Length: 132
Image 1 (spheres, helix red, strand yellow):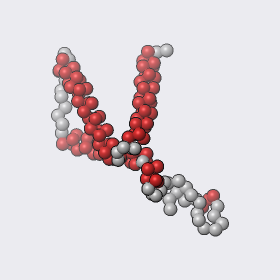
Image 2 (tube, rainbow, N blue to C red):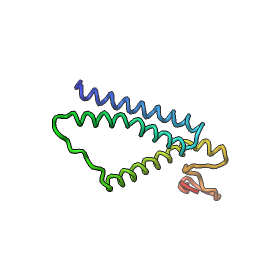
Image 3 (cartoon, rainbow, N blue to C red):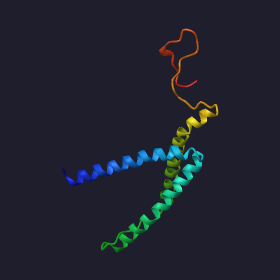
Image 4 (cartoon, one colour):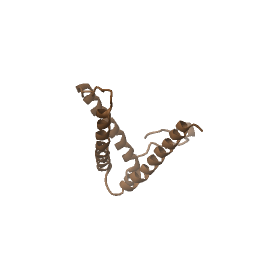
């Protein structure tokens, strides 16, 4: 087997394992804090953990023999980063709210999009609605 292919397979396996363990941590975390608090702490820890990596990469770039132009953060780059970061946070929050669905159901809220039969007499499978 090609070593490059093996490396890709191992990295894919590690990524899938981390992703799977993250769902367990999210489910357990939702027992103790709300979705916004969980995501706020999660994103803050992610940002803090990237700081050493950024420093190491900047040091390696400065040691390189070929001078590399350092990109200047332009307003468009900053705006795009804020928009994409907000979209990622929003998507992650919706995911956390989905994991909180059993908790919401215990309060009498039914957060579901499952199809259910129409309540009118003589309803058939073809009259199922996805919301209502």
